[in-house]
Image (cartoon, rainbow, N blue to C red; front, top):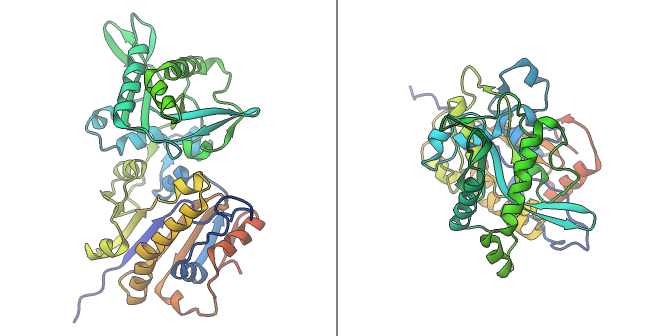
Length: 399
């Protein structure tokens, strides 16, 4: 008797998989993704639309992560989960491992703030480049400036990568620095950088007494960064200066599920790696394609693949680049996975896409392939329909 076929269930997490087409007179208008395989999968799979949420919160929800305390559970998912600690745990920099065991870290990612008319607009690293030397020089001067002395409140910065920085407040006590984020100092409750990049800011940090140390740190950091020779050199080359930080990712300890949701996680995302390590899932680097993934051995159980190649083009509203990236996903991922579904190698495929149109979820099984009456539509057509509607949709498929 032949051995039973192993059941591989794959979840593909693809932020910004759909986006409203730009106006006819916008830059890049007229570009359109050519994805017949993806369109067919979305047309024939079961569909659920949920309210808008950040990619970070959606990813954490897939892992079954919940706040550890009942009080935290009443907050929004963004505020309640410690994304900074989780992302730091997923950093591959050798110095990150011992730091990840320390409490109080926040993400302090470098950004560019620009006054546009009567509002501030924030740009993240998708809009500028920064090399390792620049990052280390800037973080080194921040550490020197904010070093804690004689009981004063200071700060410690750490650059895990060129565009991923961290900070925690420290207090010098008898020659030793200790974490000072607990107790009288509250942590900023700001959304992830992905939620504000490319958008105007009405406010930065709330004007509360508990956040006074953070407001002081941010103001001094902005002045220090603006005057730094690294930024003077960048301005001389016509590059955007890194003149501020986005402080986010504070949260209460998170309780992982009793058993890991995913057997295996495939990703190059530090946050996804950190979530996997926190929840007990095995982690491997993102393969170049689904064919490479399947050729490595299908295995069994629940597998997660995190594809984040669409985030940058979507943030920059670069329609041509976004269409090219979707077309690449079509050939490298959706076409091979559709073949695996038809051949029985893949038991099921879930596509989870946090987008500006809401949190979109499709579930596709091999038998859905035979539902020929559900005709595929171009992604732009589906996006227009979703943009014209609102709320949560639970249906077989939008028609």
